[in-house]
Length: 496
Image 1: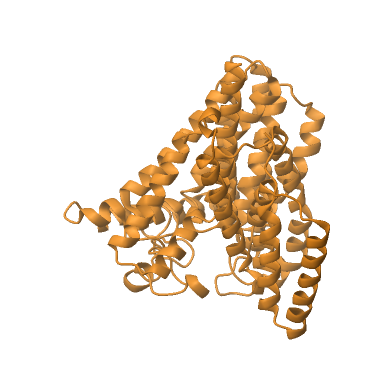
Image 2: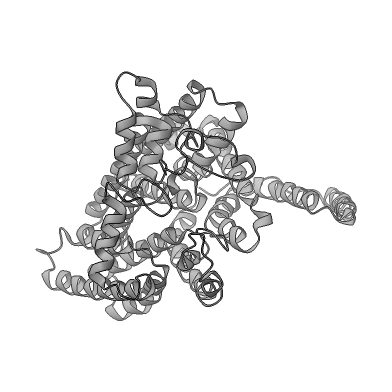
């Protein structure tokens, strides 16, 4: 079913509206007030978007995966664009709700999927945690926005009647987005890394290599999101080749350029991501396609060896070997005595410390946490302000990872809900993979997406992007929504 559109204006009405807009825009522009110009432009854009749900959908995707990150690095004064993306996402939720209330939606059988139910349950847990911890209205709004700024993307894919061409174009669009990263990665590597070298103050030069996913000139960057995204695409390509849907030459032609940025992001977790890709894609393939499984394992081994050489060259001290780098990385993440970066805790102890601080004698924080954003330190604008982390645990890093942040902010209930979300999505991708075993391209796609879910789940123990980063959340909502849409299309085709 095609997306709805508003009725066209009459010619006279169109001329009058155009004249009024021209006068109004001329007046606003003459004031020289950039904020006023942006507000008016946003309102005009909103009017246009309302008439085209497909345009809103792609605006959220492009805004979350490209515009927000580029603004963060290259035009920090325009970072409020993230609120525009969040508002567009809310508009998608409104459209999905109206679709449910419209006549005939029962016939379309657009009920909530288990993933949708769990996302709504998580939203209720976050809201309940904020209320019982006495957060104000502004804090609640900012906290909900931090967690669910692109939630509308999922519910739009779940509940709105999209043309097949719109959704089926998304895998190819993500491939194009992967190649879009290359010029930005090149610029960041050639110009920004030297600018940051020797800056001190805990700045890691290569963290700025984040493509379109966001970084700050002299601060941190989302290089780990870039690495995860690119390796997810590579996983799909590898699975397609494994299913003979693409040739080895095409795999290399597309895959090698996409792997290249991972060598310079110095995101060491990429090594684990590659191992996950092998385990997920080939766990059932050794008996069916032993030759291809061994060849694929050999290709991954070459990439892994190259990554270790690159990381040793870029990251290790001059006297360190690859084995020293591995040992140091293990200590930095799991040692009881060593923290990560400038924090007292590391990725492992951030979780164990939560268990030390929470007991059955205080069931509310144990089960529902201390409220959204309570594990964060610092922040600017509406994200600024005192939090539990800054008041009671300054410099400790209690929200170092997504897993620890969820425990502190939403308790065991919220953390288990998110774990269940990833488990449900992983099973759904596996079921689609099995269902399309007779179609090599589709089986390869869902096999690669299953590996992508495993990568995103592992990233919950690496960075805390789940609780605030718009690019990371856009990837998750898109992946979850695409799987639900695909399952429903397959069910409808089976029932015909």
